[in-house]
Amino acid sequence: MAKRIRTHANPLSFHEALEPIQFDAVFSNYSGSLDLEIGFGKGVFISKYAARHPQKSILAVDVRKGLFESIEKSFKQKEIHNVHLVHGTGERVLAELIPDGVLDRVFLFHPDPWFKKRHCNRRVIQASFLETLKQKLSPTGAFMVSTDVEVLWDFMEEKLRAAGFKQIEDTFWQTDYQSHWSQFSETDERNQFMGSWVIAS
Image: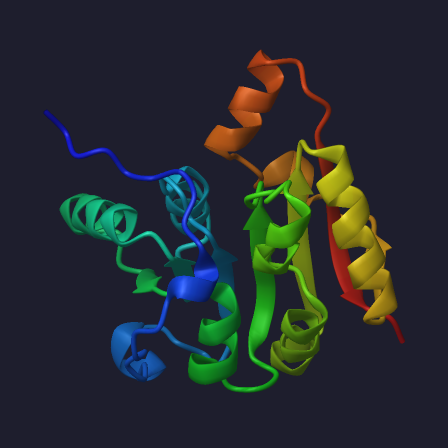
């Protein structure tokens, strides 16, 4: 029987040390620019995105250890070389592993909504996370966010605007966006909310 991997994991319970990454050693074509997916799930988006953009150097982070190990093994078998997987939380990876000003695109698709009021501090998008993100984005960098939970979208939109982000038109959602979560949303006929955000000038 396959090992069951938890859907939810409390990011505040992750206390492991993160190993520094030598990007020019990890990526054969590293040019000083990175893309980052926070919460790669089953790896559907990041594997397709990596194949579509072989020139890009991509980090993908997930806090669930079992999922990380499963997808890491799968990517090695598929010989996906321009993605480096990290076990950890998005906020800590941003703060501890990524230099300022190098992120071209950051992806956060269908994050855990943590509905209970006492659990809202577990949501990825918080004021501290966004302040760190602003430091790490390049001058033309963008933050791509999606969910099918309206109350979570409203929460994230409020936080983003308060932190000095603005939403822009972006063809990404018609060309590159493929997520197993969006397939569930369509099957269940739930509205999807998605947007690309940049630092307001």
